[in-house]
Image (cartoon, rainbow, N blue to C red):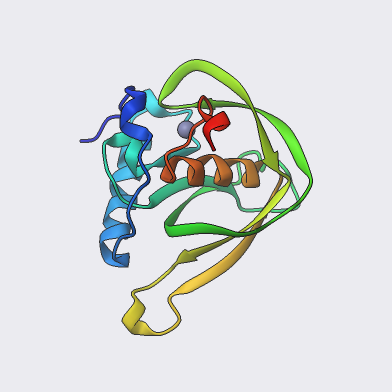
Length: 160
Ligand SMILES: [Zn+2]
């Protein structure tokens, strides 16, 4: 069983690329962690938040892009080797919490939309990467998690 670490030093290192199969195993481990009753408010988790070093995160994203907050229609998704390939020039202030820093919200500037490329199957099976666009609250979650994979979080944005 994995638990979320609260030592900020551990999450200030950039994560490494991972083979897709191993990435999916990690995503499963992250999901098991988020399903623990103590983490029931989780909407995203990156591998380095549980002491790992790989570029994998999971996020609870809207299944209905027309509804900004999604309500009950949110579903866990896995992202292996993700990167932001395009983003809005417009920024919006976002007040965010983080599982690593309980009860310590911070204000962060976020792009209003981002396009994310991530791996959906092993490289030897052909085109392994897909590109998706996220807006609204989903865009905020995805930027928060990709920050984690690059060693950034809501309390060290100024070092970016
Ligand atoms: Zn976080």
